[in-house]
Amino acid sequence: SQQGEEDPQALSIQEGENATMNCSYKTSINNLQWYRQNSGRGLVHLILIRSNEREKHSGRLRVTLDTSKKSSSLLITASRAADTASYFCATDAGANNLFFGTGTRLTVIP
Amino acid sequence: DTEVTQTPKHLVMGMTNKKSLKCEQHMGHRAMYWYKQKAKKPPELMFVYSYEKLSINESVPSRFSPECPNSSLLNLHLHALQPEDSALYLCASSQDGVGGYTFGSGTRLTVV
Image 1 (tube, each protein chain N blue to C red):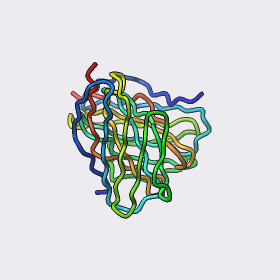
Image 2 (cartoon, each protein chain N blue to C red; image 1 turned 120 degrees about the horizontal axis):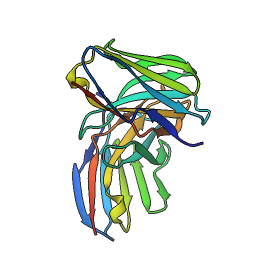
Image 3 (cartoon, each protein chain N blue to C red; image 1 turned 120 degrees about the vertical axis):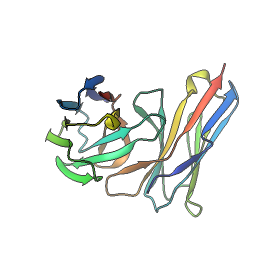
């Protein structure tokens, strides 16, 4: 299976705290992407990091990528209740397909 | 227009029914995808269309039949489904696999 794995499976934090999610994958990649999914709805693309990049920022999001360890992390700073959702990493190995990790369920308590 | 539109949002069908899921995008994306997502699981790739041609079929049973009538539309025809096929079906598009994917809000399918 090309599916990646994320940890933790679930994370509960207070509003204002930072949240960190980790993703490990198995194959070589062109890029790695992070998506958010609110309960039972479609996925929203958050950020993409290419295989030759090590770190990327977008607003309150910071993503790192370590291709030697085949791992990535997503940091959400100063979390808000509206950040409550499931977060998935997804790997793009080319050939026009995207494989999703197992996901982290984030709950931000107001 | 920066959206992927899926219809219907909810569908309940019997095991002998034939139904279709529809997906539409007007972003000029040339790659379109069907994913299946079971509760509390990640999305699983089913089919990929690139330039209106089926390029990937992830060993999906023949009771699921995709169709791409033109570059903006993607259908998923359903026939003789099983209760275990109940899931959220997500359509997505991308600029020929470059960059992030844009997902629709999905069709919640229940097979009874």
